[in-house]
Image (cartoon, rainbow, N blue to C red):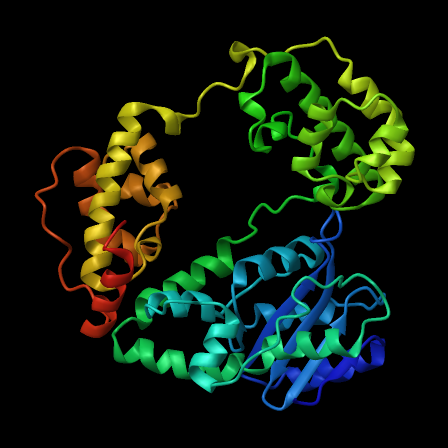
Length: 407
């Protein structure tokens, strides 16, 4: 276990910032409260640079502004694993900008690994087993335990070594330019318009995400919608993750059991005591609603349900699958599903319009753009893009054996 400094005093942070200003790369991770709270809050920032390892308590009232220049410094490589979620947290809570990012998870996927968790990478490259027991820890609770801090530290300790090894592999396979554009894309576009959760309105159709809700009779749909809204309102007020008040399955169980009293609700053993005490009567009233949500009142089908569009997306996915098989990569590293649906919906006329959609990196637009446009407009001749870097034959064969070359 490497030594680390837990920082919860301003002078500690100021000294750490002075030291970090001279490094050329640093591993970064964050811990947030989203598994426990309605409004996700940044709780820790972990940084490793060489032999320096810091865990910064972001709830300790520190002035964290000095970290911003480090993340925006093009001379310092910021190494993350699954950078997207960390960058969103840091942009939302601290308004930081990011330049020069390396994401070990994206590198892992580009290199064709079967599993791309940090645990798998550390095991593969270092033959070290990391602990998992604090993965769902409550990072907002203070004081933090030694076990929590040890776990948090290990999330960054190996990132620099992983980056250097994987960078060499990527360069050997002629993948450096392609993946650098992926990293630049993540740094600049992730969390571009990140929203303050406190200002986000309740999604009026959020109840439809409850599995089975749409298949209920009209009157029961109306009940579930009200139960969902009551839960959301309480979750906001208490700043508790909604499922910690009552799970989706429990909402449907309340509907089926039709309890007559708060005591009946309590006996279901499915509702957080806070919600039971404050909203028990409201839940019972919701069960008596006479309202209905009929089929014609449900949200209109999205563009993705258009048969013609779906057929075009299937053609795009078949092309993507062929390219992924040829290169030995996961299909999502070629073009994402979201990008394919948008292409099929908008049907850009040329490369200029394709680039304006901002769906692809410049590398992908150069190497895949004409083929994608050909499929969209029915002019594709069946040829694959030329001169694409490929993973070693054994990696391609292993991926084909595992996936059946499915897209």
